[in-house]
Length: 147
Image (cartoon, rainbow, N blue to C red; front, side, top):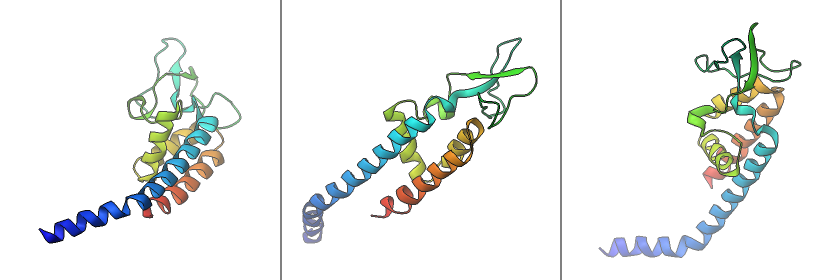
């Protein structure tokens, strides 16, 4: 039992340094969340829908661009619109700060970040989400999670 006492004392003495690390992580994640909200708000729910029936295409798993100059375009007979549903049962998106923070944290754990990036590449010029996610992975995953 004396070894357990030393471990607990070591944890208690390291708490001030851990709060600094957690504060840094929280600040960086919040910064990327706000940047993601500014760049990608509403983009992760754009899907093609049949103009005759009004049914959205959820089966393909693809997203579309509202602008005809870039991104994925809908096939003939379909129109791009806001479906109101994004990835992972409407959890992974940048529509509000809590979901943006969750999306940033999920991406930093290297789980599902590729799906989110490809979704956004379908809806806007591909260099913007590519640059955002590569920077996020570099800073968030390779640096912050290794502190």
